[in-house]
Image (cartoon, rainbow over all chains, first blue to last red; front, side, top):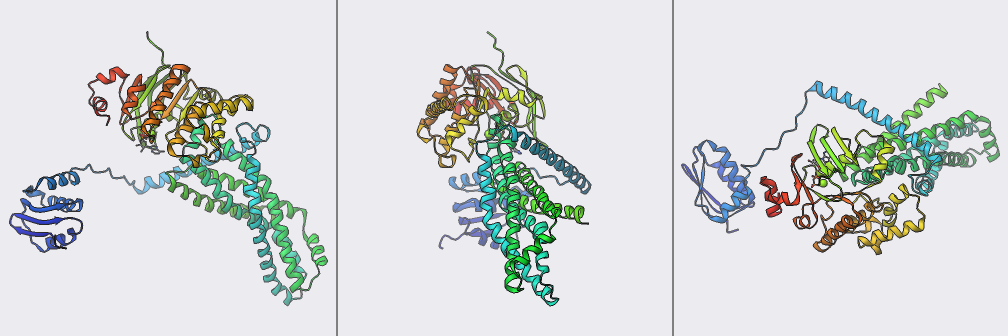
Length: 361
Length: 247
Ligand SMILES: Nc1ncnc2c1ncn2[C@@H]1O[C@H](COP(=O)(O)OP(=O)(O)OP(=O)(O)O)[C@@H](O)[C@H]1O
Ligand SMILES: [Mg+2]
C-alpha cells in the first residue's frame, strides 16, 4: 500500500506521517522498538492523514511509557485530534478488580455454600413432595391435561428407545455369558442370569439413565429457561406456585411412567436373552421361562420396581433444583442442563448402590 | 387535599449477594395516578418493582400495599393482594408453552370462578384493547417483540387490577404503537381508576402520561414529586433529563 506510515525520532520529538491505522500499527511498533528513545516531549502529527482506534491505542502506550516527560501532541489536524479524544483510553475509569479471598476464607465459603445448597435442596424436596401430594386431591394451579401431556413426553416418547436398548442389552448379556456357561454345560443358567440381572438391576438402571438423559435434561432446561425469561416471576405474580404449575405434573407423570417403563425394559431384555438361549444354547422357550419364574422371588420384583420410583423422583428433583438455580442467561441454561444430567446419573447410581447394600448384603 | 399512598416503601435495601442495589429507598405511590420511575440502565428500577412484589425478598425495610405491611405476610394472604395487582415484565414473560389466549386466561382461572364463556369474552376484549384481536391462537414464539409486550399487557390487565406495574412497556415499540399504548394507559387510569407505576425513558411519553416522577440514581432516590415539580427542579441529573431526554 502506498499510504504507509513512517516514524522518525529526533530527540525529544517523535514525528509520525501517513496513516496510523490498524494495518500500519504493527509495523510502527516494530520500527519504534528499533529506535532508542530516551526523552519524549512532543509527538508531531503534522503529516498524519488518518488515525483509528488502533493508532490511538499505540499513542496511549507511548504517553504512558514516557509519562515522566508529559509528552504533548503537536500539529495534529482537527479530525485526528477528535479521533484521539474519542478513542483515548487514558481517562477511562479502571474496573474494580474482583477480590480473590485467601485460602481459608475460600474453604470456609465452600463449606458454607455446601450447607446452603443442601438446605435449599431439602426445602425443594419438601416442597415438591408436599405439592405433589396436595396435587393428587386439588388440581388448582395446574394446567388441565398437563399430567397426560407430560406422561406422553416422559413415558410414551421414551418407550421406543428404552425397548430397543433393553433388547440389545439382553442379547449382549446372554451372548457374553452363554460362551462361558456352555463350557461347563450349564446352559440353563442363562435363564437365571437374565431374570435376576434384568429384574433387579439392568431394567431399572437402564430406564433411569435414559430418563435422566431425556427427561432430566428437559426438566432442567425448561425450568431454567422460564427462570431466565422471567416466566417464573410472572407465575408468582399471578399467585401461581411455580412448583405446582411446572414440577408437579412432571412428578406425577414420571411416577406413573417409571414402573411401566421398567417393566417393559425388563421383559424385553429377558426376551433378548431368550433368543440367544434358543438359537445358541439349544434351550426351548418353555424350559427357559419355567426356569425364569422359578428363580425370581417376589422380593426381586419389588426391589426392582421400588427403587425405580426413587430414581424417578431423584431425576425430577435434581432437574428442578438446577433449573430454579440457574445463573445468567442462555449460557446458564446450557450449563445447568449438563450439570443436572451428570448429577442425576450420579445420584441414581449412588441410590442403586445403597439399595443393593440394604437388600442384598 | 393530602392523599394517602396506596403503596409505601420505607427504608428498602436490596442486595444481590454482597452487591447493594438499592440503598435506603423511600417512595410513595398514590392512588389513581401514573407514577413514572426514571433512572439510567442498571440503576435498580426493575429490582425496586420486584422487591415491592416480593419476587425478591427485600434485604431490609418495609413495603406497605393497600395499607398492609407485606414483606412478612404469609403466602395466601399475600396472594390475595397480588390478585389486585398486574405486572408487565420487561421481557413480557409470557408462558412459552401455551397460546396467547391461554396466557391471558391464566389469571382469570387462577383467581375467579367465572364460566368459560364469560372468560372468553373478557380475554377477547383485553386482547383487542392491545390490538391483538387476531393473534389469540398464536404462541409467544410466533410474535414480534412489540406484540409480546402487548400480549403481556393484556395478561396484566386481565383481572382489572387496582394497581398496574409496567416495566418499560414501550421499549422496542414504534412511536405510533407507543403512543397508542400511552392512550391505553390513560384510559385505564381515567376510566378504571387504576393506579399505574411505569418504568420508562421516553420523554414524550412521560409528558403525556406522568402525574408523578421517581428518579433513581445509583440505588438511591434522587427526586420524587409531581411532573410539574420535576420540570422545575434544580437537581442537575433530573434537570438534564427533562431538558434533553438523556441521562
Ligand atoms: N439476578 C441478578 N443477579 C445479580 N445481579 C443482578 C441481577 N439482576 C440485576 N442485577 C444487578 O442489579 C442492578 C440493577 O438491575 P435492574 O435490573 O434493577 O436495573 P434496571 O434499572 O431495571 O435497568 P434497565 O433499565 O437496564 O432495565 C444491575 O447493576 C445488575 O447488575
Ligand atoms: Mg429493568
